Image (cartoon, rainbow, N blue to C red; front, side, top):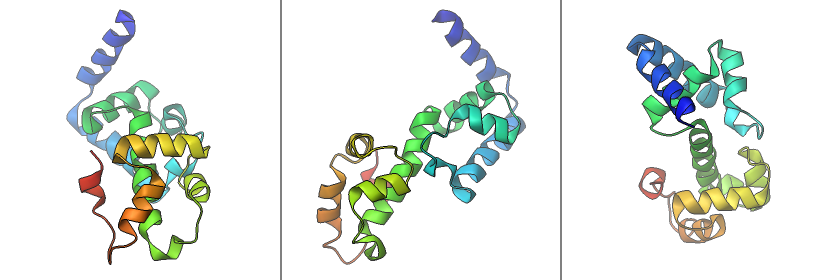
Length: 144
């Protein structure tokens, strides 16, 4: 385990600031524009192959810029979209399982687990709490 940790630190410290910014922009384009997080089996390796960088660079940049790992980053994108869909009137008739699938979760249970961990309530509770209001909840305030 020590060797793996040392490699991560080496990659993190050996990346120049311009390279970190370039890779981070490419990661964000994959998520924001292409919405790759909606693919349930999407991995850091797949992203690395698509943007032409080593997977360790991807992991190091995510750690530096996001302060988390790739899995956490992808789940945050999924949960933010789910929160939007849950409270938007255009998706009011969608079942939670359909929202989970649409946002990239491979099953309902995983969606509920990650959602509850991030938001402190289940998706159903979130819908009941915020669909009664005239606007959507502030996603930033709820996600910690």
